[in-house]
Length: 129
Image 1: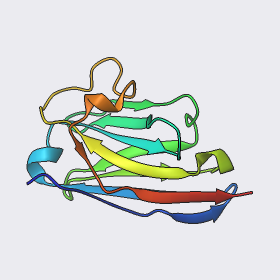
Image 2: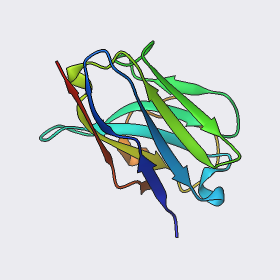
Image 3: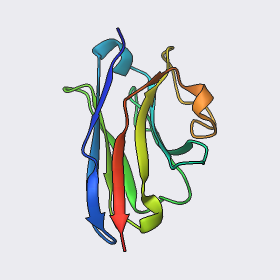
Image 4: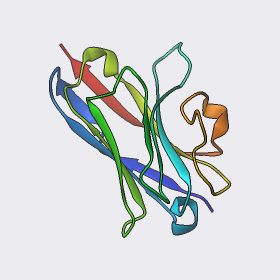
């Protein structure tokens, strides 16, 4: 059974930092495209960052470039999202996602949540001004 277990959300003031973690099974994690998406009530789920765990390629939404960093720990089958300089508009439920097939992320891994098959339960991030 595929499981993505997220942790690390919380409440911070603007300018603060949080680190999200997404632990996956070794089969799901290995050589896969894994991403972080976020969603606020009434809005579509949007891609934030993605990483190909078989290499070093990373992808970011324009809104988080320079502030967020996605990384991996192969020994722990875990993907992280380090979020710095947080803004109130970053407030959302954050979800970890993975694909059912192994391979690179392709050209637009943040374009649509439909490109992913497996999802974590979500972790809430709240940034106050």
